Length: 225
Image 1: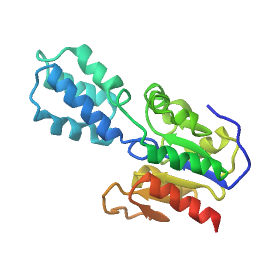
Image 2: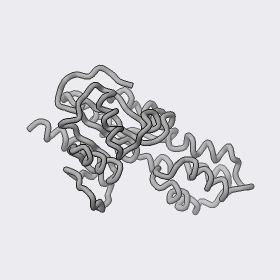
Image 3: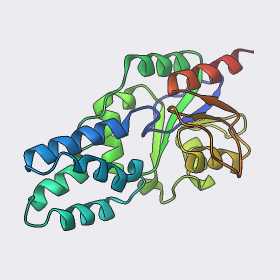
């Protein structure tokens, strides 16, 4: 998907899960509802969140583990519904993030979402939250056949919106997928810490921000200098 790009400040590539949206909170709520509906132990929430690994575990592995653990106690349909739609059905976009994205576009930045995952799920999240109407475009790893930190997905993102990579910024919460990916291309980056300490050793972000609103604000501030 792309929309009309106005020449301006530069290219801003932003991660989706746990950056623009709180994907973990949405999945946690979905799991809690699943456990309650299937009359399973509420204490299993912590196990399920660890299994999910912040969305980095494959959907196939998550589904297989859930089916094995709850064999004879939960319906397979309920398990697959949780894995296929759980987080996508519950994600929200905060007013602050919406305003930050709108401000970036208004100031001439070309904004594109760069996300790993299944196309149907990731696009459902963007449409549910309205992100699809705020950014100039997006690329999903399943669609383009490569995933962060592979430089190819960032090149695909630039091509999707007719922008060039030199001078681009990458914003994301993953040291490996986002920051290492940016570093491989020599791009500036902002790591969204979400309350964590930086633990990467192969590269460092250009800047660290507590959340995506602050991250976007930093990039816009640099662009005004």
